[in-house]
Image (tube, rainbow, N blue to C red):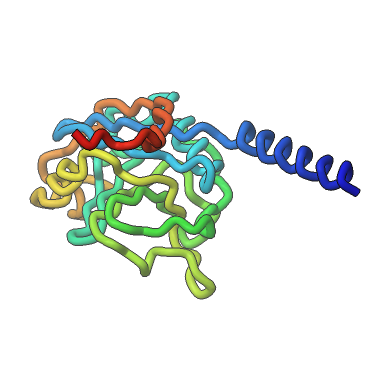
Length: 205
């Protein structure tokens, strides 16, 4: 009986190690704009398809040279595929499966995918929340929008974009900043591992 229990314990440890190894590495997106830099921690563990989709577009340089073409005052800023003249960028891939039921919420600084009437229609358009927007969360009565990361630096840049005068060109009439905010480059890197707190006793002196 003891051997059986020990075998179960060893199997559990092995399974835990395997699942930890299978977990996707957490990534960071750096969005360099004409107003400053925004860094975003991408949650590949809870939104793997959505994060992979965003990374694909970033590595293809799809976002580079596009603009934040929509500002909803007090709510969000949106970008993805349009230039300063309102022209859409080619190279959009097939829509991805909706991952809005991943437990991530539309809080201030959350990054989420935009979609049409069909929740499974998201491609390259994304938005950043400038305020908590629970009405955009997934629940039993609302498909909502799939959050896939959180701004970790540059919320002041997000706020600057959100405060610009509107009336520029784009797919949403009058919702683009008059002075275009260009996404100059989006790069992806591994997030550094979290450093556990030291267990050493504090020095009383």
